[in-house]
Length: 87
Image (cartoon, rainbow, N blue to C red; front, top):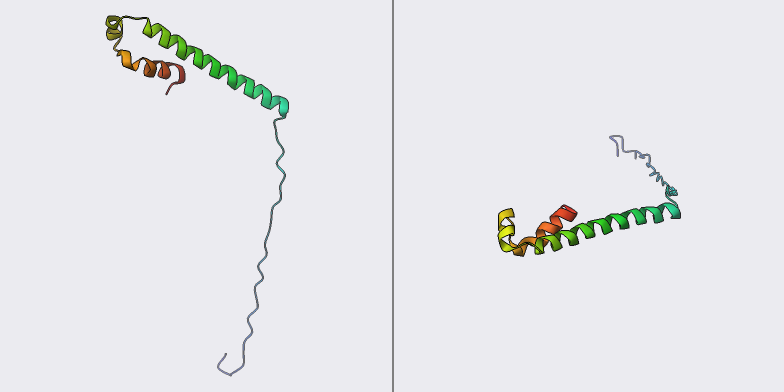
């Protein structure tokens, strides 16, 4: 109310809601996905072969040779994992 006793009407603000509807277009088709899978599968196979070869070679060494390299026999799998996967 104002000082004169009349009611002041406030303008009601309207909420406008905007929506966005977008359809995602895939840049890769089925053939591209299969090719990407084949590439990643080959890379994983190469890493696995590096791991297996490293384990086999280190297991073939004597304890003395492993000690010269600074590797304990118990850590052969860790060393091979780091060599193959970089982790």
